[in-house]
Image (cartoon, rainbow over all chains, first blue to last red; front, side):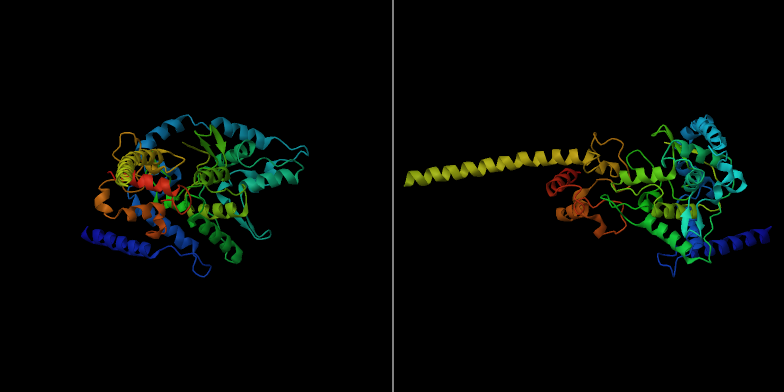
Length: 288
Length: 120
């Protein structure tokens, strides 16, 4: 028994020292290491909130704040996004004028694939998001693209996330194309850079400032940030996409938002989603 | 001549006195103005991060330290003002916006906030 105990402690110490080694890898192409960053971020939150399980970070602030969690669980009992998912399913299955549909544009007919987005597209040399490919699918089939922030695109995206629930995010940064790592680094820089009149970085609130009150609000943790998108926000009273949320975040910090699906926003999504690798898809989610 | 000097003196005294009272009034005004800025979301919005022992400062946040023992923490009032003007000098990654440097508040508004919080 004692041996087992000692062994456990030994393994524990070995793990901890390994974790301690996983520091953030910095901001140059020579040093940046996405996997080290991911571990460093997880360790940061493990230290800050020892009670919270890593897998639970898909639930955002509710992973670390018991008070608001109870309210949120009540909301999730009759999820406000339920109808939108149904509408999304109908939209997804309604053929275009040419008789084709969304299923023809995606792998596995578009079912259960949310965890693979965003991804690095080598041919196009850019990060592709799910919403981007939904609109590309429309345009390739002679349909008008949808507006990016809300409405049908959010519903279709929500349905596609719904069919992917519990799939594990596995964002790849292919090593055979340095531009992929450069896109990751660009997203990382964007996340940590201060901007706008209020001089805030995303990290100010969503790393350092997590679960500390800004007036009566608690900023959510960066870990698990993107897993539940698109999101039904009570404040909006409807679904919105991740880039809509980015836009709102910019306005709140008195910074001029980029256009939805701008390259830097997609790089930011690439970085953020990589940080949530290993967590599961739980979109669409409900938030304040 | 003597009469003139006396009246001049009287005028001077009067000016000094009234200037004194004007300054006293403006101190109260400064504090009131500072408080309004402290609580106003589109102005200083200091209350979003700093608790202060003022019954009107409800639902204060706690990203930053509470406004207590200000005279002990900042025996030199100018250092308090400098911290509000640009907190990134002391900590480049601070969440606190540089209220002076980024023209979020005017110089006079910052003076007013200093007077308000320096009471606590």
